[in-house]
View 1 (cartoon, rainbow, N blue to C red):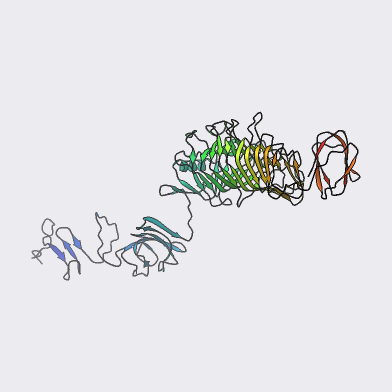
View 2 (cartoon, rainbow, N blue to C red):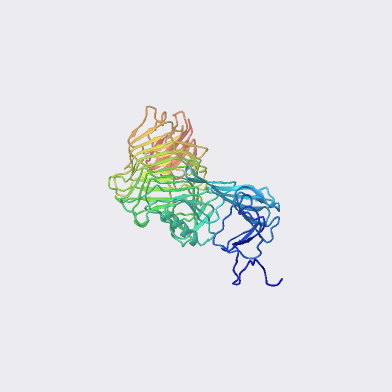
Length: 593
């Protein structure tokens, strides 16, 4: 056609002459298509094979508002969607409500959905569904709080929740460098730390003066902290920089962990003390090295040598190795007048103490020394329901010096058998050259099972002459072994109470206050006969004869020599109605019990 269009669409400059070009059925937001002179356009069902770049994207439809595929749209290659309600696309893919992303590789397939109330995680065999929710994190507006729902929650890295809670996964770094830094950082920032496995530290952990320290494990079989630093280290510094005589660590908690100090490298578990109202409970404290303690407190330990501990609780399984040991498992030397160990409690409810697991017979489980100024700086402490497993012998259980107002209730030593006994099992005495001693102590329901090597030298309970106002109530002994031996060392104002065993030895009684029926009822100690003279046991019961002092060359019981040379002290079993004869050059004293 010559002369061109009579109604041209595009003018000579290439611009659109008409306001728009559009399909015959075009209706805005309804049908057809339109390309407008102002640059806008409207289409229905557009396929674009390249890139779309836009400043704004507005979706106005319902159903399949936004659906994105990997490659050509098809079943099984759905990547993401944003729809107002759950639906199925034309290829059979099940599309979740809200904003969702989909995996299209793996078995099962996974998807995550975000709605205004939270995030949910799904699995399905194929993208055709059905999608099954496996876990969710939802916001609860009424609280406000987050609700986490999952069959199993596993934390694979350090996760901080809120302002004070930390789940800490072990790093696996056996040098201790990584775990030490992570744990110390959390302590310094006042986080409650939840442990999830095995950890290693190579430097002392220092509780925060501002925040204390709260360490919570999954149980001593599943959570542990092991020393991995240099020899002669410290796992926890409980008297850190920043504390003082008036500024103490407070409200600390360690629970559900095994704290392990191996032989090499070696370390004290707790070093120094400046703490109040703290609880170390339901742990396993394992000290393998003979030269280090579970807790080592003196003027030379901690950053300051404060030696202050009040109103704390300890209830743990303890395993103490090494032999011969050179320090007690609990070495609490608080002699300075500024030091205090008051109103603390140790107990074993649900636990047991293996205090000489390595066979040591030289050291007590605990020595607690108060100050000798007359104020008795160690007071008001309690040991309740303590159970000691002593199959490998013992160097003694509890040694109190210069202490007062203490309660020792339910000390039980099990399976002592014929193994070594290196010290009295319970000893109350004083620091050398001090006369204040230990006072106002109740020893109640002490019990020993077995123990052939308990003796007058190393008895069950021993006092020294400076002790006063001591009560010994209902001690016992069973399952073979030597009968109960108690040496009062002429201590002042000792009260014997309760039901005592039928047979026991009471040495150096001193000044006693006893109930109307004495524990030695029916046994009267006769005078020592002249050398070579035989006397009869006319008490009507078997007795224990304890020889003290003198120079005895032989002891004969019922015609049989039981000792050619008698040491002092010496215990002799004398059945009822049998005879005893002593041959001596210097007369001894004796006690029948």
